[in-house]
Image 1 (cartoon, rainbow, N blue to C red):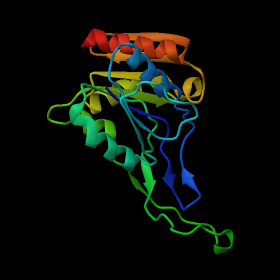
Image 2: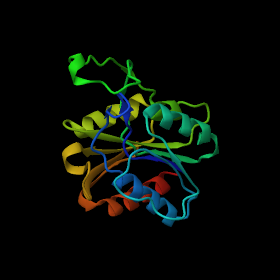
Image 3: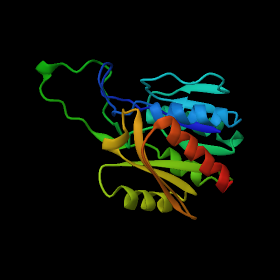
Length: 204
């Protein structure tokens, strides 16, 4: 199994950047649950506020979304299952500065361009692994998750509300696949991770 975890960081200059409030707790819990289920687990990790479990087959550090994309694509052919649990920035800074931007130079203008879509790229390979995505939304959570699953050609997606999950020890999730939708309300992330792995096993 290959899992992406943590938050990506898109540099604006050598000291500043665009990131998000993901702690990596859900990704770490998934890696632990996968390992406990007997899988050989590789992880591509962005910024984390927690440690990863012991016994992982491979850990690759990847700061930006582009770094994460390259690390995933280099290793994906060897994987049976891919879980995209990282909070990856949709955009990167097109006009990144090589020097620290100084305040006395006036208000900076930051231009953005799209990052590669890691999950969609993996799901649309000619022989893809079983792909599981996450949809962290602020509104219309389940509706947007269903659309994301269909658009990216995924067999399974896990939906959650940003306010209920990101940076916290607990979460509420909806596991969605072609057969059914299963809700878990206000559970710790290790319990949620175990349920996700059990559902993947059932679908496989």
